[in-house]
Image 1 (cartoon, rainbow, N blue to C red):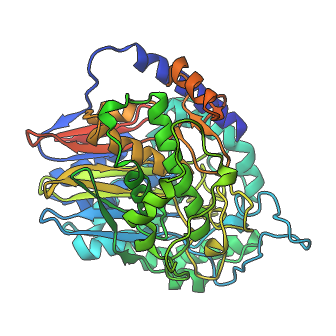
Image 2 (image 1 turned 180 degrees about the vertical axis):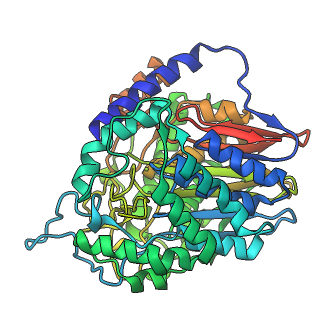
Image 3 (image 1 turned 60 degrees about the horizontal axis):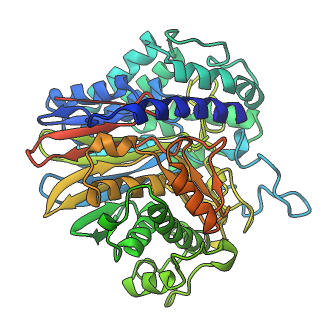
Length: 563
Ligand code: GLY
């Protein structure tokens, strides 16, 4: 994993040097009517072709997700889960939760040893880290409610690509090669991906093609029942895991009410629990709303300081209060109430850094490597979908279902294995996010849609584990406060603070030395060396002339395609 971090860091250094030297205005793909922006050109094109054939954004979502499961196996998935926020062309909004859940046989202390200590890696690697997948249930739910074209037409391009193969990119070859040992450790047979890859190699996945065909022919049951389910649980058993046929049969995606709030004349629509993104976004944006950012230079020390202090307070609340709303009582209204946010920011001072050790959760009344992936879609009818989906870390648990060809997530690590003990993202949790059978683990995913004057303005989201929330945040501010274009915004260097550990992660070479010196003087600890890329934002901005501008993150192989 350290090697992956190093490789990604090197590519980021290259990325920053390139963009910093460009003086001309950066503009993304501009289209007239419709667009799909995703982690891979092949997937964006498949989604866009569905739109061209008369499909809507929801049809394109199904086709893009399934294409990503083939062409972007590090995070695109059928063995994981995710969240979708939508806005119809008549302004109706909603959200779908297809997050993984804990198996029926899961228990609060399942990752602890006899002395009550967390067993390193058990929740994040191999068969024990797997949650019951939700992606296929999510896609059928969306298609059932909104779909226009037949499901078989939406899945066929993914089947064809799995069977005929696609060309591996350089970044993909590096990531696959660096994960070989982990593939070997997690599985009891030699998986397809376990070989030395190089750019341009053709990657064919026949077993995955057959699994997708069973889904095409049998619907949701093609995954949760029958041959696929049997292959799944047989392999789980071989490896000593606990997911059963009953777990698969019982899985349901759930429609949720999104979190909606206003920020400087814009309406933000984002994901609700079990994703923490919407609540944290609301808290942070409301904390900084009283400040006139036009008087504070973008990415200056004052800017980084203000956002950091708002982030610190919000992530402290996240750790204490947030969990699956179907299992714990979370006072969402209190947590995002203006009066509460004001009180939380009372201790903020421009003169020095607040210490995280001095910040706990507030008292309310009553009470992604980070390899997730995000795609944004706007169709020719004006519908918009914002989808973040994941296996959790790169290639999830690294377990590839024998005979079925898809990776299983390691999402169980998003639970709090023990209060106060950090997960792979350094996030700590409490009772609210403790493991229980059939409970959904708390997520940071933040698929988001922004409206202005009752009209669609922006669709955005990103992978990045705990940094998802703060990457979405910075892009909203870039557009709303700093009036950037979409690609310009996406390219900007990003930073992140999450209460604990008490430091600011900054993308290397993205911030000038004055900014960094000022922050250090105020008492902030900065982490640049070995920082991961912070997010890979894929977004669409509606331009004043009615056209669409895509923002495809150059930190990855991401691409906007449309017409
Ligand atoms: N697996 C990362 C998240 O859901 O936050």
